[in-house]
Amino acid sequence: MAVDDRFPRVPVEAGEEPGIRNEIITGPVSDWATDFSHLEPEWSADPYPIQDDLRQRCPIAHTERFGGAWLPTRYEDVAAIAYDTDRFSSRAIIVSNFRPPRDLAPVGGSPPISSDPPFHHDARKLLLGAFTKQNVARQEPATRAFCHSLIDSFAGRDVVDAAHDYAQHIPVRVIADMLGFPPEDGPQFREFVEDLLEGINLPPDERRERVSRLFDYLLAQVHAHIDEPRDDLTTYLINAELYGRKLDPDVVTGAMALLLIAGIDTSWSAIGASLWHLAKTPGDRERLVAEPGLLPTAMEEFLRVYAPVTMARLVKDDVHWHGVDMKADDWILLSFPAANRDPAQFDRAGEVVIDREVNRHAAFGLGIHRCLGSHLARMELRVALEVWLERIPGFTLADPAAVTWSAGQIRGPRALPLRIG
Image (cartoon, rainbow, N blue to C red; front, side, top):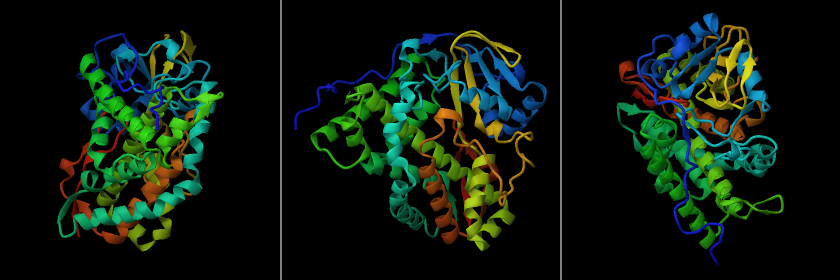
């Protein structure tokens, strides 16, 4: 089969030359209301007291870091920005010192999550079919079997790192299968996640080099699928048409990057955080073992209380918004975790109530960018917890001080040593 001439066999650029607004990113925070940084160790370890304090005294915090950024902490403010596509753009969703040029909109670098209307609607529609409940259900038997195989692999051990040895592998395998990528490339996927989501404080040249590695990998996979088409999402994207013609290369690789990165880190973080909670809360763990039918309800509460995802927007034009003066190209961190703990929205907001019946949380986002893979994420989380609780009903934290959490906009355990039995 002839090579698709949309994809020359040379490395693609991982994005346009960005503008630098400010070099200050990390360092001790003097006042979270005026100098916040979601990259600091205390935020990574436990952001909730910080968010609760800000919600009371300064519900829309500001910082000069990252070239200027805002952090709303009330549910109503987060929701209002998420739904307002006229004043806030999604052309970049990871806060850093770099702003992609405005002409990148409405497509963005990783459509549809980085797309603005009107392009967003059509780009999202292309992917929706792959993530219906029916299609996700087809993934469940293989996911369940894989979870059992992971537990088999550490049978007999007294202490297991549930993040590294279990949670991280599950979404990697599912997404690799869906995209038609070699399962043995899993370790590379985890490196890509760290490069994009946790490497924003790197020097610009090094960050661009790391991001380029991801897009070089994706381009190689595109060529492999052009040479040997198969029944998977990559081949589907290569052949898909929008507005009467096949997708541009940057749309294909951008969508693949979205599925690879967003589909992995969010799910492994949710699985890990849920196991962390159950390890330190024996009453909840014992109840779920005794009442497995309660798990779907408990799972939604874990998603609410330990929501892993914070997305970003860019202010389109100078605007006075809810009492603050935002400037064009200021960042806004949409903290869905903070919104999910707002006592104005949720009763007993700071507590984990595993039988909470009404739970309209925002863990999967709000507005047009609500996670299109939410059915898949729920399936992965449910199956991972079902298999773990069935096979390992008794477990505790081996060393609470050894638990570490990722820094940046996706928060989840990166080291989670659990004592089995």
